[in-house]
Image (tube, rainbow, N blue to C red; front, side, top):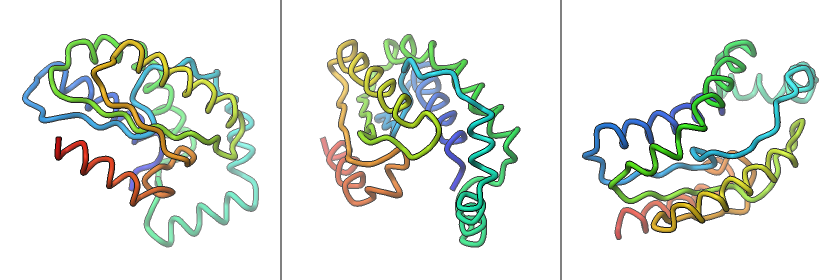
Length: 165
């Protein structure tokens, strides 16, 4: 499973691809993939958290289980910055989509530096997306950012219902 930053970037790529080339049956974006006024990341705080013993243990466990990202911190930061640069153009891409769209957003803050600010910004972006794209289906699940990990059954049910429309 790619890291959080890779997943974010892939959402931007999927939306841009579907808008540019068409032929898609639908687009589902989970926990992102829409413009949101997120706070400027405090990279020093993030890096300090990554060096903490609990995080290092969790990352080691993920590595042993073969899940998570194998990117270095610098690589993850670069991908996150690239994604942030692509976000403003996503709204125009959504305007060009002719296929059905569903967003599934998290409703809880992650326990990370700036987690609550990030959640509030995502909420604002989610509501703005719903206002601008009323034809799109927009759902929230009670989880943090990693919706597939925290709410796999509910997410699968939403996607199956979307596909079955």
